[in-house]
View 1: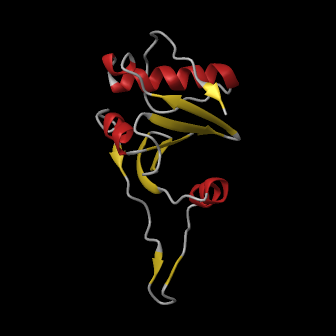
View 2 (view 1 turned 90 degrees about the vertical axis):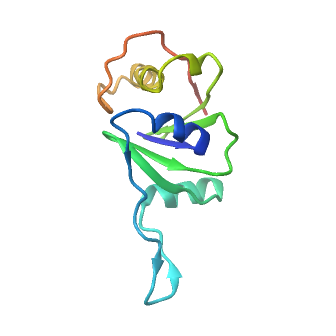
Amino acid sequence: MIVVANSFILNIFRQIPIFKMDLGMGLIDQKQERIIIKDPFMLKYINMTGKQILTYGTIGKLIFYQDFTLPSKEFYIFNDETIYGLNYTEEDSKVSAEKYLASVIQEINEKTNTGRKFGCFTYHGPIRCVRAQ
C-alpha cells in the first residue's frame, strides 16, 4: 500500500512514532549525466499523472511519497490497482495521526478483504469513508 500526499499531510503522518524517514535512492547517474528513476512506483505515477514525486518514508509496509502539487488536505492511497482519494478534514485533526491512518487502512482492508496488515496499528474506532477513484 502506498500513500501519496503533500508536505502538510506527510508532516501529520510523520508524528506517528513508528514513522521512518526514507528519502529514497539517488536519481542522477553521474557517469551518463542523466536522471534515472529506479523506483517502479515513481515511474507508474509519472506515467499516470505526468508529475514527479519523491520518496518520503515508511511505516511498516506502508510507503509514503511526496507530491508537492497536491492540494494541502488531499492525499491518495494506492492499493494494488485501486486508488483511494481522501480529504483530511477538521474532524480528522481531532484524532491522533496514528488512529486516523489506522482507521483509513482498516476501511480499505475491509473493502478489499485482503486480510493483509500494514504497519502496527490496533485502533478500532470509527471508520472513515474513502472513495475509490
